[in-house]
Image (cartoon, rainbow, N blue to C red; front, top):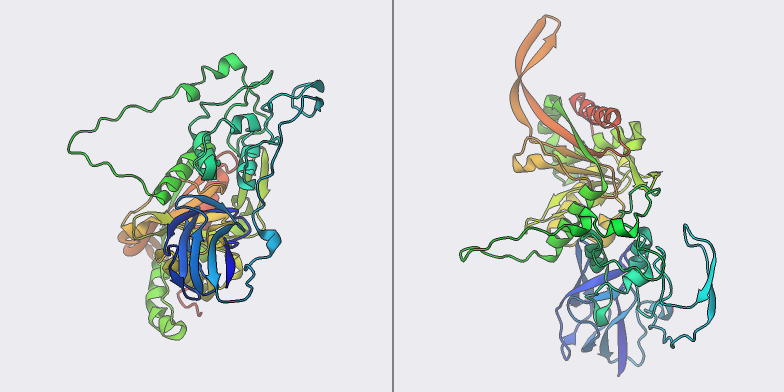
Length: 465
């Protein structure tokens, strides 16, 4: 007999941790090869973890709702093999927490603290400087990165209550703390805590004096009390709902939202699709919807106006090389998820159609991989699928623009012909672009959405694919 150490598998370059949602096998259960042992969640994607070996589950090393680092041992399985090695290399295991003895008082130089001269002082509890100092408490790389971007020092981090294993601070704990106004910000030593500044706020913001931060409207804000009567039903948000709510609030606090609207005559596009859809499905074994056509038009417009394909970091604009278009997809439970079509500008219409259909079907079945919702540079949402004529969508951070396409309706429209103006029945739709007015002005935003409409209006009704 041998014991197999099951590691939390790597789920993408940008994924450092996952939450245990549900154990499907219990200690003592016999397991076959590829049996699903547990369900995990990373951001908005739920995934299954299968067993790479057959045997008996001996123990679960994490409980449900625990946050686990990628590469950590999550379960022990007894097998009939003489020796079984973990799926990942030994050095990829989560390193144990170092044992740190109580430091002896000593003289230490404090350097590189913005706005202060170099000081020499005895070692005291870490001072809030907007950077992560060594601490007895464990913080994941993701938590450290967020804290650094938000100018939260170790002293302040140590005051935040964690919900993870042994009180560990998770990403959600830190984001909740930031979004709630950092009311419990600690000020240790001679330096006051920095004000709440989002990761995309201008970097030249200066800290307010301590007596001003105490009376800040953000810190004094208390949500109004909600009256609940006997007939009201209280429904707890599910995990994804909470994440979406946090993301939406963060986006409105980060970006200055502006929306521009355009009405487009898409008659040629509609007639073309009606003409080719049966032969297309027969030939490609795929249904062609309007979504791939919209994505193709958006990708072309982004190439014409690349400054819509950017992100903001402080006072720096990051111009994206790749055009990765996310498409908002509705899930059976009512939540939304945004799978991403990578390098959409390099795909033809058939390739985009295959990607759209594949991602949409796996999104509805909760089979998306974490990487398939990462690194989007622009988002498209089809509010017309719900019968809506237009919408004002919230930007999907850290992007700077999102396009909503409304339902296509037959309407009377005035057409200019060589014989004069006539009224005709046309297929019309609204496009609405929400954009970050910090970096996208009205000229760029309005011209971009007009260009998307132009590509749709000028559709070649005789196009071959």
